[in-house]
Structures are given as C-alpha cells and as structure tokens.
Length: 271
Length: 255
Picture 1 (tube, each protein chain N blue to C red):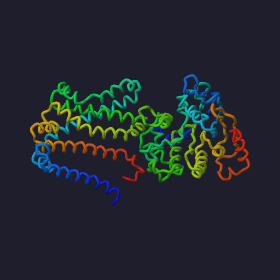
Picture 2 (cartoon, rainbow over the protein chains, first blue to last red):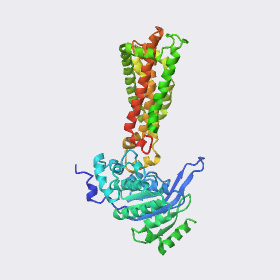
Picture 3 (tube, rainbow over the protein chains, first blue to last red):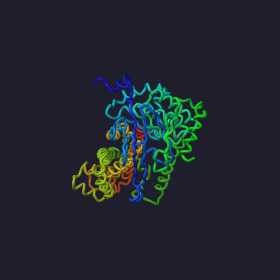
Picture 4 (cartoon, rainbow over the protein chains, first blue to last red):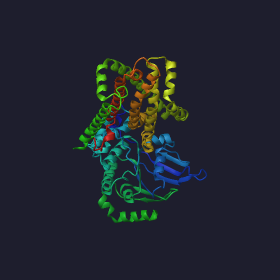
C-alpha cells in the first residue's frame, strides 16, 4: 500500500484545469409557485487554467449561487458548466475545493485537525493522525506555526481564515472557489489577509474563482475581474487587470492604472 | 465573597434553612408523628433501617440504570435512522410523540400483566419515559448543523456517514446531553410508577408499603433516597457533559 498520503509531496497537488460557464440559468421557487426567483439569467464566464478570476457584484446578484454551481453543489436549470473538461456535478465536485463564506471550522477540533479534515474525507482518505502529519508542513508555510493545537474559538478572524484556506488547499483540487473569504474581517486585518492570500496563491498556483463585494480586493488579487449585474445576475463587464501577481498592496492601490481600473469597475457596477 | 464561593454556599444555606424550618414545624404539637416525620426522625430511620432501605435502593437503581441504558441505545439508533432516512422520519414522528403522550400511571399495570412481576416491567416503563427526551433532543441536535457546513463536507467529498460521524454527531452532543439530563431525572419517577403498580421490592414499593403501615419516618427516608438518586444521576450526566463537550464552555468566564 504505497500510499496516497505521499503522493501530494512528490507530484504537485494539482492538475491544471480551466472553468467554462456557458449561458447558465438558475431559478429558485418563489413565494408564489407561478413566479420563481431568477438568480442567474444567461451568465457566461471563462477562467483559464492557473488564472485568478475575481467576481464582483451587488448583494443578492447570485455570486454565491454561481460558485456553488461551479463547485457541483447545484445544477443549473439551463446552460452548461465544465471544470477541466468535466461536465456533470459529481466530477465538478471532485475538481473543485470550495471555501464557504464563514470559515466552517469545527469548534471541537483544533486548528491542525480542522485543516486535516480535508484529508479524512472522500476517496483518498487517510486516518486522523496521518492527516494531521500531512497538514503540519502547510502550517509552517502559511504562517500558522505554533497555532496547531489552538481551538477555533481561541483564534482571531484572520487566523481562522488561514486555517480554512489551508483546509481548502489540502483538499488537493485544481480549482479553488473562494466565497467572500475576508467578508467578516475588519479592514486592517482584511488588507493583511489579502496580501497573505496573494502570497499563498503565488506559492501554490491554482485556478481560482474569488467572489467578493470589494472592488479593491478583486483588483488586487485577480488577473481578471468579472462585474455582475443585480439580480438576475449576468456578467456585465470583464476587466483585465494586466499587472504581475503577487502585487504589494500599498504600492498597487496607489497607482494610476489601479485607479483607472477601479473607475471602470465602479462605473460598471453603476456607482 | 467571590461569585464562585457564593454559587457553592448559597444552595447549602438554602437547604439548611429548609431543613430547619421543617424540623421547627414538625416539632410543634400541630402534627402528630404519624402525620409528619421530622428531619431527625428521618435521619434516625435512614440509619436504623439502613439494611432494608439500601436493599430497596439497589433494586430501584438496577431498574433505573437498565431502563436508561435501553432507552439511550434505542433512542440513539432511532434518532440516527430517522435523521438519515427522511421517509422513516415522516412515518415514525407521530408515533414518537405518541409514546410520550401515553399516561404511564395507567399503562404501568398493563406492563406488569405483560411482563410479570420483577425487574422487566419497571425497566420497560423507565425506558418508555426516557426514550422520548433522548430521541427528540438527539434528532434536533443532528439537524442543527448549518447548510453551509454540510455543503463544505459535500465539497470535500465526504460520504453521508463521514458527515454524520465527523460533523453531525459531535454537533449534536450538547443537545443529546440536554435530553440525557431530562431522562436521568424522569427515569426515577418512571421506576417508582412501575413499582407502585406491582412489585416485591424497590424504594417506590417500600414507600407505599410504609405509608399504609404508618411507618412515616421510613417512608420519608425512602423519598429522600429517591431524590438523592435522581439528583445524583443528573449530576453524573452533567459531569459527563463537561468532560465530553469542552468546547461549549470556551469564553465562558463563570466556569
């Protein structure tokens, strides 16, 4: 039994995969049966392998629904979604690692155990202690050393998000789907975490869809930013950021290019 | 005085005051000794009748513990099965509520007829009254996991049983313990009902007998032991809860 545990260390954790969303529609039952709520209406967007796509839109425009659809947690009512060529929900589930809005950490597990959860589930699962051993090196790499045995209640919001992100990485999928990862943080911590995430994605390149309601965050972290309309959600504009990643926050947000991009984004959002 | 010391001392003072008041009332000439036994008479009976009382206590403790164990095991499997399989939930929920609506006083004699005298009818009654709080609280606990958490587990590729074992059951522990604490206290009442319907030993049986024979102090002593048993079971459950769910107390300065 030459194990799956050793596999990640030898070959990279990820295969490359791109994402293609074509003219999808998603409806939910409304208050009256006759008129359903149309969350997404003819949305199309593509993400190249290794690209970071930021998705920005007003509250309730269907950003999270889009992410759950790509993740294979839901199926669209019309249109198609492929992730690395895989079309059905089951295969999409296997290709994507989903990081929910709230960190989803289990209060009875310590930080290392929470990250290791990703290795204890699914087909390639390993036992608890081996999962912990495999997760430990990522704690060192991502600034969590010394916090291994802290319970989530003892961690700050930023540290909790780091643990959740390490868990997402450990799932070993080529595509990361991040749903407003820093939405609940104060603005200073949020700035630090954005730089941290930029560094983490440079160290562990993946295809990423990053949903956020913060234009600066999307422009700082993404290669391309898709702006969504209010419900029913569609992509209104797609902006190429065209700057090297990772970008140092302070030096980037004060440049002229950044200001121009931000103006275009805000205009597309109707602000 | 610190808050903790007050929390320890206040109930003791309250208890002592109640005993003193009871002694005071019982020592007057308003009641004769057969109507109301005083605390000292009860204490005296606890000592002089200790052999009979503790034999009876042993019977009742056995009934309670076996009944509790059966209700916990049955309740656990019922709750998990109903949680995992929706049609069973729809089909069995009314029956579950119905089990709690059964008046124990009336069915106790029927159980005696069905199971004969001895241990089993009492065990059945204890299990019947404890089954509902255990099952319903565990089911509520299993359902308390957020939709987002369940999506995360699906996304990680977790099977239904992995989600149950790693997320839903641990999440349900605090709720399960709430059910167990209720079960621990009502179990003693269930055993007494069972013994009242027909028995040859046990504290409930003894108290009833002493009542008829005007052995008032010993009847009181039996009641005291029953109360101690119920409180003891409750405290043991609370202690197990503290040990099993340490994360629920984090950030609580009072402990």
